[in-house]
Image (cartoon, rainbow, N blue to C red; front, side):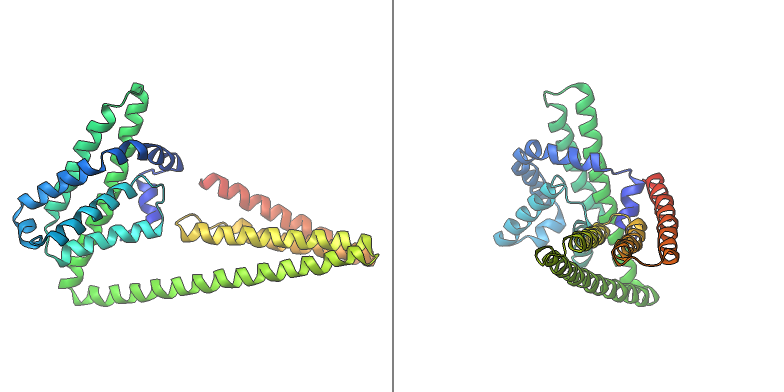
Length: 298
């Protein structure tokens, strides 16, 4: 299955789309009972619905699940957690032997009702069209992901080779999640260490060594800033964002800048200072190139 990032790119699903969907939530939330009711009525009219939903508790559970899924489209949180939730919906349908036709029909019902709701809003024609387009887009993304998981789960059931491949992929994904957890914990630990370093440097301000205290404290603050940027980059990456190489280049740049500031206080030899300044220029140029490359990819 394609990654969430690739799916978003293929559908040109932007941050503006996310913001617009969030603005639509108050409008669509008013009709959630109507939407879920229409879905439940359709499902109960089918043979598969009559077979599976024989108990009131199951009907109530399905009704709440449909409302939750519908409202999630307007929450603005379209990350890996949202992606995995849609995959599970497709897998559950396969395990209960629900034909993909019913899933497509259910989405069609929501599409029809949603379009009618948005079309009747007292907005400008341009605003109505923009709302309809983004609503259609998020529905198509939902259907794409659920249908893909549908197909993969069916292949998994009939192909032993695919099951082995899928098991390896699942193991790799879990290992990657564990590695990401370790990375986040390590970044937290290093950030706490950088804060401790800043506190140690700041104490020098009260011991009479004012010049040295200011310079080293500024260097420590730079390190804290870089650590925060690293954590933000990793969190964004876990949510499906692009990985930013520039942050890692900035780590090297800040480290050399801090070393240069400390060397200035120690009155290091001019040869060493020249090496440090040259390093700043080279790393700064590389940083500029990387930033330009990242901006072009956006």
